[in-house]
Length: 172
Image (cartoon, rainbow, N blue to C red; front, side, top):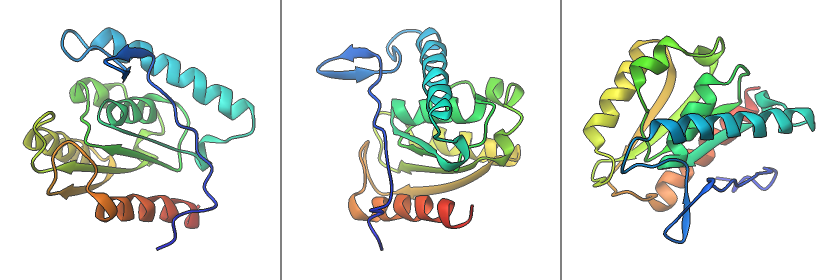
């Protein structure tokens, strides 16, 4: 499979320093304030990108772990449709609230959610239940599970992600 040489991308760091890396929200305390703040920051970035000629419907928002949660937050609350959303080893914050407050285009979004059956940080079973409930509510989610911990399952998972990305642009 092609390695997507035509793809342009923007890698965004989370706003908060965290043990040599970055964090979108506090996951040891109450994550809500950080999630709401970070969602607003992502909306501002997405609005800025749209104003610079990068339309949402030709953009994919994705992330790993906390970034996966933020991809869902951005993609399902943002008022413009994306080419796709990708969440890797993440989860959904407050799924019941999310379903009550979905953007008008959320059910038109195409989404890929991958997760490890051996993830010690974000339990597989809980995430699988969330995804099942979101799918039952009419969200268009492609769910893929891998025998992995809280990581990326190498070429096997990367090929699934590349395929999803390529498919979103060949079908637009």
